[in-house]
Amino acid sequence: MFAVLKTGGKQYKVQAGDVLRVELIAAAAGDKVQFNDVLMVGGDTPVLGAPFVKGAAVQAEVIDDIKADKVITFWKRRRKHSSQRTRGHRQKLTLVRITDILASGAEKSGVKDAIGTAAARVAAHNNAPAEAKAEKKAAPKKAPAKKAEAAAKE
Image (cartoon, rainbow, N blue to C red; front, side, top):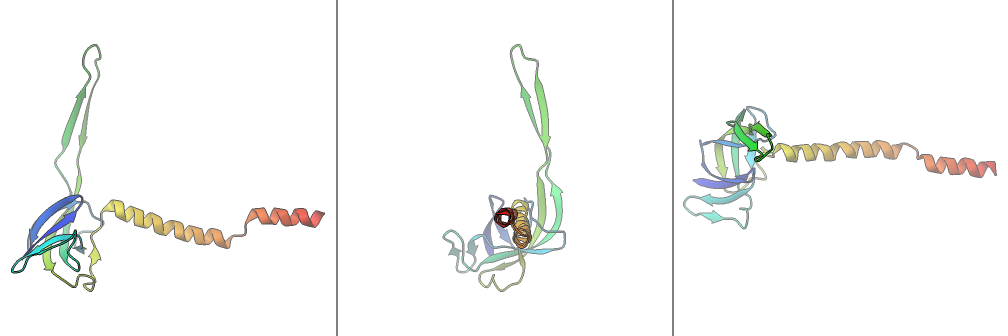
């Protein structure tokens, strides 16, 4: 049985036991994660999603966080300008081993979703302001207090 999953803007055809290098996800080494964006489940009866297969998932174990090979970019400005710039970049990746492919019942598995770090930051950011908003609501507002003082003086 195989599956085609989508993560980090890329698609991967995987089977149980495969080791993948995917875009960085918010999980530590040894964690078990689940990819819910499954485009196709193949085998005896292939199932295509529109766009995703409902209830299907791919479970994986995080091996390690790694960095890709360095990509060097070089800019040079020509003709009467002696400027040049060299810049390098190493993409952060997560190494995962596919453990299981679920054709159905992904909601009941209890394994945490594999979300990218950008999504994790957004989720953390959305949770933090909710607590701050609750504290602000509990504090008395300054504007009505000034109006009450002005009304009391008259």
